[in-house]
Length: 310
Ligand code: GLN
Image 1 (cartoon, rainbow, N blue to C red):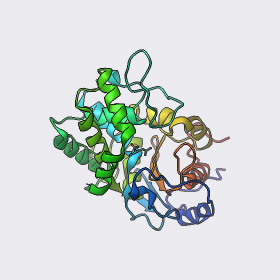
Image 2: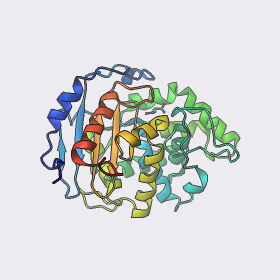
Image 3: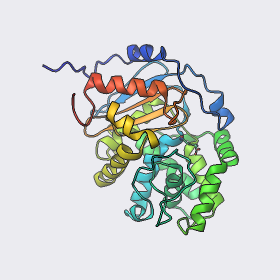
Image 4: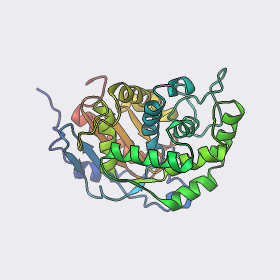
């Protein structure tokens, strides 16, 4: 008989309490709003195919989505370019940090859509003639994934834009290689605003579920992206979503996921559910320490590892 727990009754508060005992990691300090995050903030949520969203306490506390936005930017870019984005961006893991100043050797393309170079380009490839139009398109698209209207934290967006020197460097490098058509500053502006979108774990779990369930939002019923786009995105999350920690993550948790510097992790378990966890202290790969521990337990307890039980 299975010793698995049922996601409909699983005790998320108990899991949260257990992982709160972990005290490793450092809060990101790239912008003031992230540096001042409460290191003991932790919340979890699950979004199920019938539209049920289950969560721990503090599931309504908002934070900037940061790199957890990257799978959804990739999805919107694939949709808006009718797949041409796949010719413009690689899909191979880099084994390097998320903000490495490096493009794919030989092609000059960003290596994959889950690192900053790739996300700067996917944000530039969504439909819209200028920064405001692309920003509006991205916000509407992210809101459709979440099943509710999301908004940008203007202070975070401004500081991401002002202080993101490595992103400016990457955008200029992509211009020099002919990979980026819009201006470097416009590319950073749109990407910075996408990173600054405010979510909570419930919204993020629904976003993950929409990818896990073939592009259909289980709460609203809206087909946000076609199944082939959702599958492409989840595939690249599996191989590249946790940067140079993706192999380690896949072995221990076994769920396609995307990490972020706000300490959020969004997960898509194909055909089963979406999940999200947030807690700001990060390990050396930029992954939430408690988020990793909680995801591993969740995967074990609910039998979510895509390669099966040991
Ligand atoms: N805003 C951050 C950056 O571009 C996002 C990085 C991340 O979450 N890993 O530097």
